[in-house]
Image (spheres, one colour):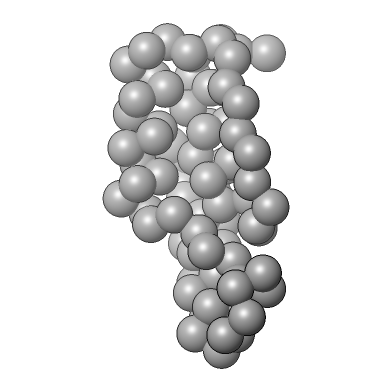
Length: 77
């Protein structure tokens, strides 16, 4: 994974954690997956050579970046 993508993921993760520590209303929380879960999704997409991925999320794009980076390596459009 590109170091700049990892840096972005770290920043987004910290932002989500900081937000969720301050916000008690569930609809306003980020509720990001963990970095370990993101890495697992990344591995699963690559191992499956997935060309199409559907992600439904409403947060800050943390899990989308994990999936998109993995999809890029499989040649997904």
